Length: 122
Image 1 (cartoon, one colour):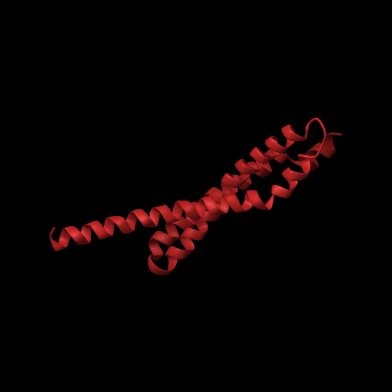
Image 2: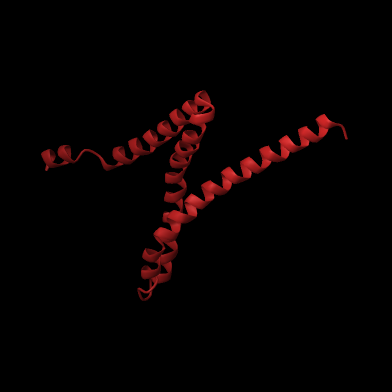
């Protein structure tokens, strides 16, 4: 192997390791949020007759919420790390992360509706 082949192989391994670490950090965020809310699911498991169903359903909902919430938070954290070394790339990812967060918040508040309009019609 030539020197350039060895360097190319080392760079390729480094890129693969970097992406593995990125995916693992995202999964760690999701697992952390799920573990934070695990006492709720554990307590629901003690309800007679429906505890197992409630525990599984609430656990699944918490997992989905964690997957959705962690995405913009991970992108924003990722972009803040890039801002120091590659400001243009970091700014692009920061914009993407904030846009994803904005979309999530927009859909969250649009589902709630307008409480003042509901009171006026009642």
